[in-house]
Image 1 (cartoon, rainbow, N blue to C red):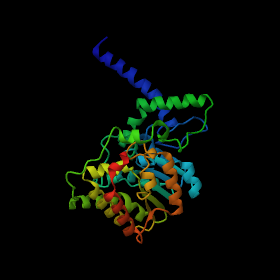
Image 2: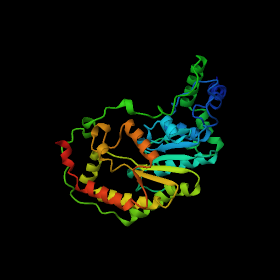
Image 3: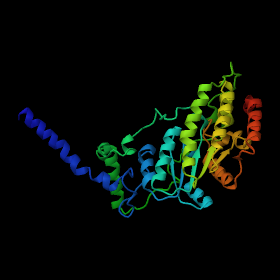
Image 4: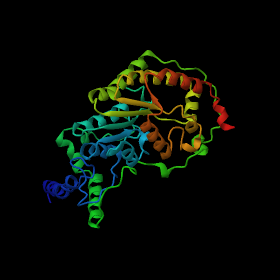
Length: 353
């Protein structure tokens, strides 16, 4: 057989199966890129990975409330939020997500939904980031987020998408219906051990900082651009939506790490600066649980220095609904004074006693 003939045969063997099988992806649509789940025909799970299915969920599911943020929001239960706030919510967390990445998905929600409530974490870790920064350690399937149709071939001919679609069809053929709940989606609570052994990981002391790092003017400018673009502007653009934003309650060990590294003063000043920017929006209800010392000092609430169990997510929901632990223009100075006094004077080595 001539080389030309070999090439023709090879192309036929490759492309004919692709052409035959590619319709299964847009019909079943495992990443919800084109439509919401066809639960009357197939059985869907939320199994495609956050950054592959979150945008599809946001664009095509039915809801009037959205729970999002970093891994600090993964253990929220949508059903509990719905019961408390009288809404129908989705949960679309982005583990390790930057402010820009999370806000981009929030903007997508408003394009074809009347959103009444937005619940989101405001993580200290990402305050001092560039306004357009994307995570470097996470997948970024831009072909699922943009409006450019031709690069959808990355989806239609994706091996992972094809196998997932076939699995969905197979389960549907067995009579399974429905979709796994957002209570379970991305919830990692049952996969970890909580308590001091997990959180401390052999640490036996906190050393005094060698030097206290002073915030620089460039950092405040970066924080302003980041917060204004990715937190404040969306609320200004959608005054009829109530935004419930919160600073996650990291454990006392995380605060101790900031103290030891000389970062505590910077952290406190950055937070105060961001609060001042966020409080200009009347439709943002901003909460902090940093003065819930009974949570923060109890390492049984944590799997590591920052991540808390789902019972803390539940308690936060109830407190937010009741309007407790809210930061307002009237109490912000008192909150900042109390927070500063506690964390700058706390004996971090006392947790080992």
